[in-house]
Amino acid sequence: MNLDTKNWKYFRIDELFDLKNGRVNNASELEDGNDIPYVGAKKSDNGIMRYVKMENNKVSKGNCIVFITDGQGSVGYANYMDRDFLGTINVVCGYNKNLNELSGQFIATVFGLERPRYSWGRKLKNTLPSTVLKLPATPSGDPDWQWMEDYIKSLHSEPITTGCNDPKSLDSVSWSDFQVKELFNVKYGINMELKACTETRKDDPEAIAFVARTSENNGVSAFVKCEEGKTPQPAYTITVAGGGSVLSTFLQIRPFYSGRDLYLLIPKHEISNYGKLFIVTVLQVEKYRFNYGRQANKTLSDLNLHLPITSDGKPDWQFMEDYMKSLPYGDRIG
Image 1: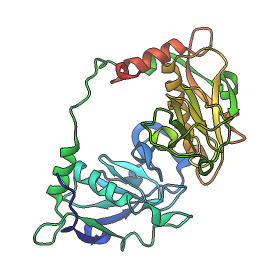
Image 2: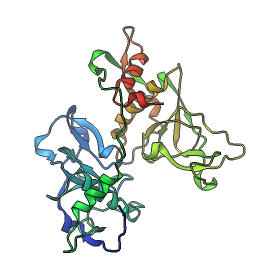
Image 3: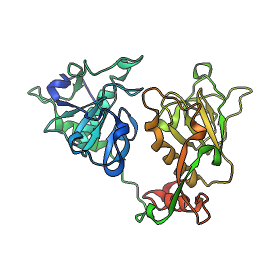
């Protein structure tokens, strides 16, 4: 389908949606659990920070656009939420009876184009209702919800197949806590500045990934030319952001340069890439501890990792590897 916008029309957010604020004022008061997702001011993972126990008086209904209006680093983004959730007061939920998952994805993407307006600490809460979006319109001048839905459908490729449909149970093993420094040497990266590098295309045979303090694109913010005297960090290294999008953690699959406030976790004992991916997920769960501008530069080594253990109390790396392989699409991990 052709994205010809000349016949599109501008719509105010408060014309499109019934707006309701999130209801969670203090996330630390929520109890961890499996009842309902807690959605914060976060673009990645559909805004889900963690899963918690139900708080009936704080529930926001699903099938809505979640606009991030305040918080650290993600103001101006939006996600579509398909299920009921607990939302921070830093988000506003938009409801429309014509909305569904596909049109919701379309609108969340268009809204994200407004993101540059909210750099440098600007907030969105007071201006969200009057913010305008340019959207497909029907001949009568209404939003063309069907066109948006059809466009997203047209983008879908053939589904990826998987032979893994029986995940291992996380309740089948015992668990214990280990500090990061017990299992890894925490190494500061080479602290390069992207502006001092020569950017290039990803398909350049000599391209080096530049990993920064971002929660997007596996932490890769650009691809650059190799710099004389600068040796890239090796592939299959775990990177952790100590500042910026704090505790954004990824397994890098190619050699890379690292930007400021980026830390590398070097295993003290051999760990498979599947085990490293398990660690990445466990560390990401701790991101909520670093809201409100807190940094992890001094505390990363002391963070606890809650991990499966063997009968002698050591990390059960084999279980972690087997668990990751058992997940849907685990057989697609290279």
